[in-house]
Image 1: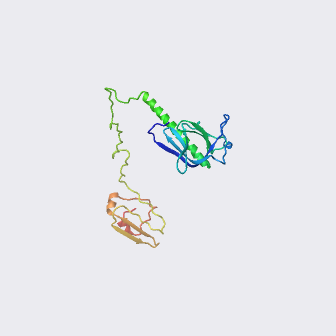
Image 2: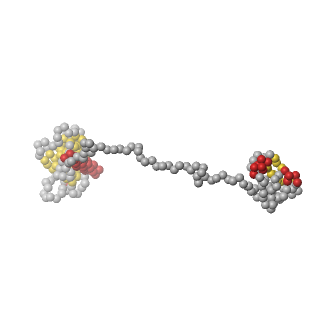
Image 3: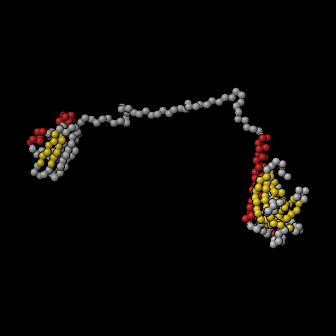
Length: 263
């Protein structure tokens, strides 16, 4: 029996269950529901499955008053207290007991297969939990009796921690102006002017760096315009510009040749 002070939990409740008187077993063969009077049950009521500690109790009670008709204590499943029949999944054989310890075997059946499935699963889950609790208690006992791992410091034992003293990697320094990565400034030599088009029907506009101080516009007989910008300060800085005679057309007037550097 369960120890005093343990609480009782409800595992499953089924409102409709039938109870049958079964003939005594003549041999070791399994019970068969076909041997019972299935069309005339001896009692009908509800079934309530409870658990107190590791023991489950199958209680047959009246639907209206809740008066206890019979109960079957189950200490293991499957076992002698609950047996299945060989010809149906809706019928079982229970071993009921009274307060004096006398026992008898009766047949119970459900009208719905779902109710029979819930009855079976409720008992399986309970005893699965009992098995897990037993294994945990055994492992705890073995752990208490075995040697414990001592992770404490022995007398006089010390440890050294290096925090924030890691080696720093030398970062590459950027190269200065004398380094190889920087290019020297361009020399102050002569810069060739861009080539001009040889066609007389296009406009040629060469530009020289500096601030423009004058503009010369000439119109010739072939309807071609030439706009040239120059700066005397830039002429003195860079010197004379020379270009092949074939790429630059000759000046049209004497006045332009005197005002501009000859190309």
